[in-house]
Image (tube, rainbow, N blue to C red; front, side, top):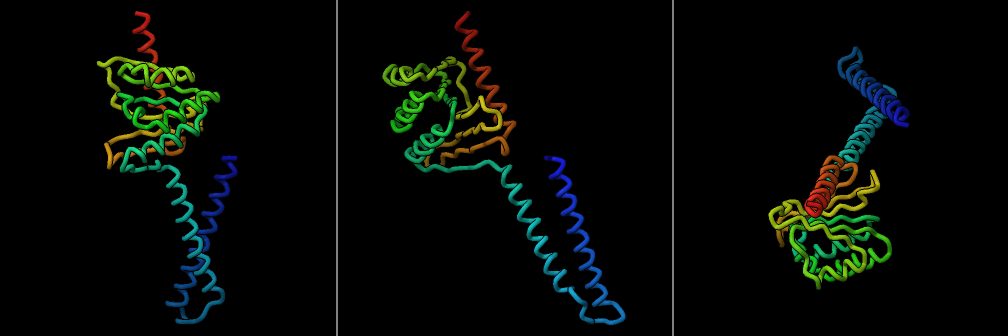
Length: 218
């Protein structure tokens, strides 16, 4: 399939180059030839086709380029961030949340309710944090099947991100947060816009869980 796409692109480029060459030759002959200013058959059609091809190439490259750009959302309030998180975790068969603290979850009951609802229907949730979670917040989530991994207060993760579909190669989505309200920025990567970033997030999750396991065994 990839070979067919390459051949199609090469054919399109050859047609584009040929059209451009014929158009330039026609314009040059009309301006500088023995019959200066003569009207050549189909010259206007060639110019029109060339313009359409240029526009088509620009649109195709722009669409291709935009697919490699991550999506960025700016939230001005905690309510907007909560609404985003509620929708984001609802689209994953597995969800991993990495946060230095979970105070924001206590302030977003709609997100906590969505996590419990999705966990009860089979979605695998993992939460990695550096601070022990208070029982009133942890117990309802644990009862629904959410797994908590606590590193230690000395190993506070600087990264704050949520990774969904980590076990489905090519379907992963990663939301990375930075800043505070009213300039709380969330950048969303997928398999096109940030496969390397997603790979790094998976490594962070795997290393954190291995460290917690080793500490518990020690």
